Length: 86
Image 1 (cartoon, rainbow, N blue to C red):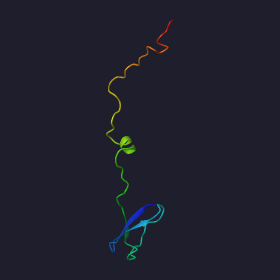
Image 2 (cartoon, helix red, strand yellow; image 1 turned 30 degrees about the horizontal axis):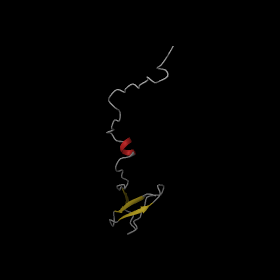
Image 3 (cartoon, rainbow, N blue to C red; image 1 turned 60 degrees about the vertical axis):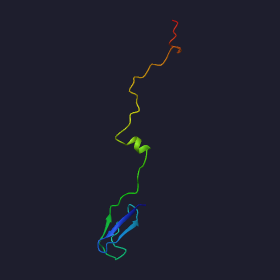
């Protein structure tokens, strides 16, 4: 369950509540019982670091792994279809 952060505009207290997504927002301050409570938008603790699926699949600066040289033809001298005795 997510942790939501609230601030009371009356006593300036900041507090956190663990709530379900479907729960109604807190409307009473637990410190002073005021109804002047607002939900804050906090920074997430989710951080993507280093390489991996995010860096490889979702960055704008994708490195091209393709070779710029034209592909060389394989040596078919030993292939059965190359030695046709018809």
